[in-house]
Amino acid sequence: MDKKKQIVRMARNAVMLALLCVIGMFSLPLGDNIKVSLQLLMVFIIGLTSVSVIDAVIVTGLYLAIGLLIPVYAGFTAGVTPTFGFVISFVVIAPIIHFLNKLPIKNQFVRMSIACIVSLIICYFIGALFLALYLHLDIQKALLIAVVPYVPFDIAKIVIAVLVVSILNKRIN
Image (cartoon, helix red, strand yellow):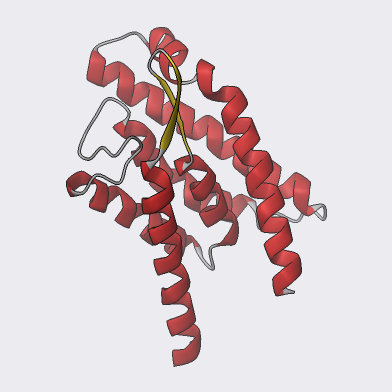
């Protein structure tokens, strides 16, 4: 790969990481212990637009590492919290999104939506499992606490991510 492409790729990854750090900090409180953040929206966008699986892992992995020390997680938190499993899942799902977005499905909206929905299910599983282990809950209770209230918001994030990436793809091409 030539130097110019390497520089553009590093700059793109840096911008995605910065956006994830900044956007990921903010959360909207919606009721008793329910806060909606835009972390997952950015992870969807990162996975759908990353140049390679490695880039998706690098960006989300650096986010995970930075957040262990600096409060860049939802609600301006840092370190290992009960919802840390969801942050761990970002490193897993971003490359899965990238990979699934390469499937030979002509309709880009369908392809991107499938990639995000599959990854969302994996995110829910990892996050709820970590929560259950961290708080000594059974998995059903963890799902009720950490997944069920967020499903409509996360579906909306998928729609937004697919629309944003579709617009970006049209502008770039």
